[in-house]
Image (cartoon, rainbow, N blue to C red):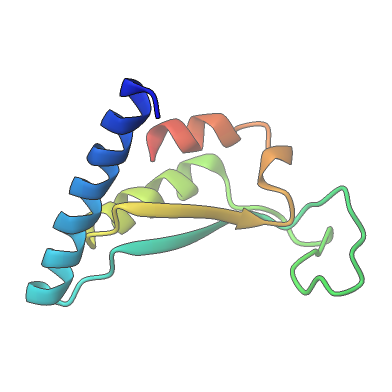
Length: 97
């Protein structure tokens, strides 16, 4: 492992340990899932989430959700959806998170 990856691993471990300790004391979640879009460029037969007829939440609403998740104690966030990277504002949402 490079020194950079070791530092990143320790940083992630510290954040996770703090979130876990907070969970034990305050019973808060440490991990969250954010569904950012229903659009997808694949057509998987088993997919339950793809729905091109429903509109995505506006960016401002998603940023408020991210802020609320932070307030609840969530420190790790997984981005889901149809295909999150199809959203033109996806990188701004990730940077905000």
